[in-house]
Figure 1 (cartoon, one colour):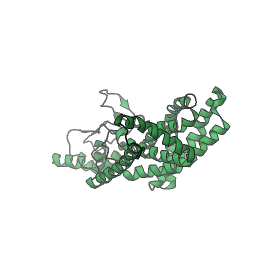
Figure 2 (figure 1 turned 60 degrees about the vertical axis):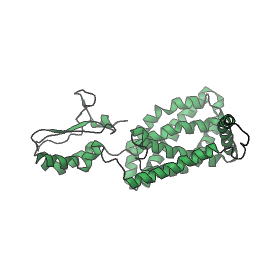
Figure 3 (figure 1 turned 180 degrees about the vertical axis):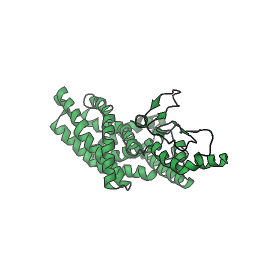
Figure 4 (figure 1 turned 180 degrees about the horizontal axis):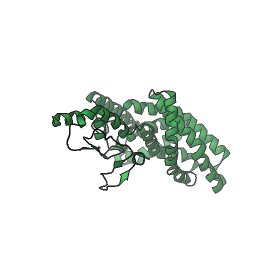
Length: 318
């Protein structure tokens, strides 16, 4: 009887989520993801290595290898000079797609095929919409606060970036993520209120140092490319925060109510340990006392080997 109750407990969706056992996609979904990645990376590699197509006759392999990066750089500068908005928007889309894919896989220690392709495509669409707007903002910023005017102007520029621009852009981004995912506007608005503070604080630990380099060491014609490259890491962080689900401990409170009759059959406590990849990797103990409940505000951190008590809010904090 105890084995049956334990089996039912471990098969519960919320417990499986805590254990990290519900993250695997179906074979069909993985095949679709594989085709998507193969097409994307295949096209990128083909484009890069065929930049000199039709011109390499008589070139040695060494000459071809040396010319590939130089000619790709030259092609980028040419497109940037002739079609700046289109070029910057395309780079923005690539950054947003790649950043979201990394946030679902590499940043969480998951397999490269184990990602939500619809979420990644939605993020790419947001990048497409942001591209022209970001271009216009940087043009406006450089016009009113030319970084060449000195240290004070650079500090003012960084201050504007990290207050008005950052809060507005992040609020729009989080709202777009929610609306494109099908959430109602009141829910989206509350999500922005809950998350914008943490996102901004995280940005303040990251971007001011980056922009000290941007406006001091990077030549003006290459600043957009520099910011976009660094933006890859930032967008992965932002995508992860915007897509964060509710605490697993809140879900387990509902699971306990449903499974209370089965839990009461155990004479000894049962400890369920969260998967290492979970954002709050802790152990939860179920007791047979029907008056006990999962207290999401008092969780013992077994991973550190200590007996200190950590609040759920602290455990889930950025």
